[in-house]
Image 1 (tube, helix red, strand yellow):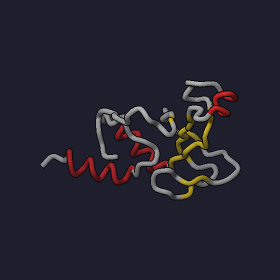
Image 2 (cartoon, helix red, strand yellow):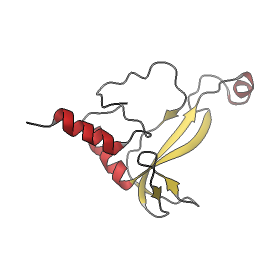
Image 3 (cartoon, one colour):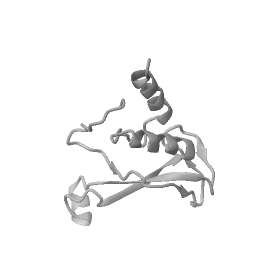
Length: 119
């Protein structure tokens, strides 16, 4: 998805995410891959966590988790390296609030420079 100041994802979501408010230290048992640039994040490195969830989809899931709660089924979190997190926070501060964790932040910054550069 390209840069936009307004969100139009439609009504059919596969999963939901919560954007981070601040950095944290990766303290998992294993390294994680950056959801944006795909580099490995070392344990103890500064990064951001993007918790993900989805609604129950089938009768069995609805019976177990209930219906209508977007956080009813927890999915694996996405993680973003410090560099991509820096770029995300910068773009977010500029008003681009519809960025998902799977987008390549470096490509979005290049797009920003091309579109909004003062000439």
